[in-house]
Image 1 (cartoon, rainbow, N blue to C red):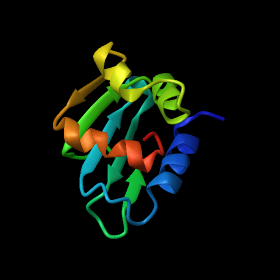
Image 2 (image 1 turned 120 degrees about the vertical axis):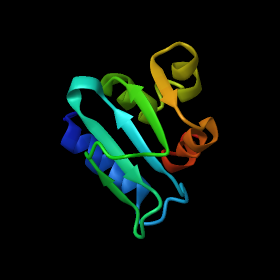
Image 3 (image 1 turned 60 degrees about the vertical axis):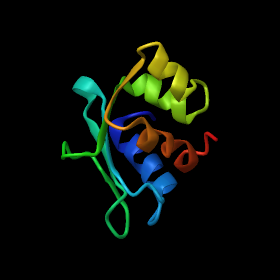
Length: 102
């Protein structure tokens, strides 16, 4: 099932307690909700809060799933407008390691 709750749990497992992100990252899925990764808290946490973040990524839930399933390259998604970034690209690149995309 690919609803927000199952995606949140999947990301929570990938992030773990110490992701090394050292940043707060928000994914905006439009009308489908938010995914918020607090990589500064100890332990790290993942929720569906619309909270202040260091970077914000706007992407459809479908494309987000394609990215974490390694069917869509996140850099290509940014270049083609399938995903939009507000903030520091270097922080976004740390997600590659968390999701096993590197």
